[in-house]
Image (cartoon, rainbow, N blue to C red; front, side, top):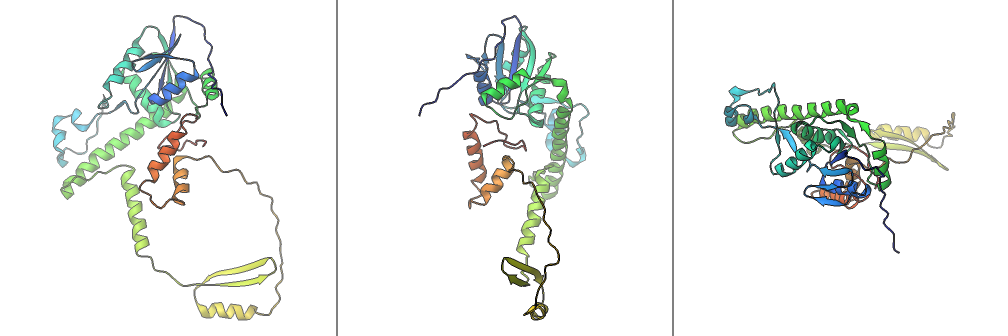
Length: 328
């Protein structure tokens, strides 16, 4: 069966002003360009009549390493700790300078009158674009595209309902705060523990507590001692009343003998009407949890999930590390 592919054009009038749309990754940028009818391929971007679509490559700009503040921090001496920058520095991620230069040039293009943040709809997507925008020294107005599906109709509708970037300022600040917290904990704690144990030990704000939880869980499993218990059942047609987890057999036998041959009366029947909502759409965590039930080799589980999500990318936007719900 053949299906026709329909391209939805976003109608705009030709004028001297242009809109720069910045996606989080090239694949999403291409999908946005297709939905908007932008077909002109350039180096690092797509150009249409009055729309330019470009992209970051994930985290294009990030926090500088400790030695950017002082050369002596390279030695990792405990005496220099804690390292707490008062004026945070940001650098272009290694191997991504070419794309940053392209974005910076586009932002400074006199034809561009506004920049659209089309990075993933979440805290991290907000941070990725804003850091590039700030590093490039751009001052042009920001609009925000906020969609969770890559259906062409959803994309077009999203561009018809762009919001002012100022509405997401607090989201950006929360993401920046999280990034700085990761830096402070990671840089300082890693150096302390590496020195104390004379080997490189990576410590992280999320990684280390998670590792501690796994270690505690593993210890509890290893030291678990099974306890025998007894359940007493009173069975009748369509009824199974259970008194569970009685530790002593003598007590269970006593309850059974006292109930044996006796009549039981139902004193109260409660009827409740409940509304059961349909299951929520998958995020990465719930999808992994579902696969764990069916997958023995957990080593390849995460990669299988990511491949599955990538295969659905033509129609859906996804995040590898977010709680944004995605339809599959």
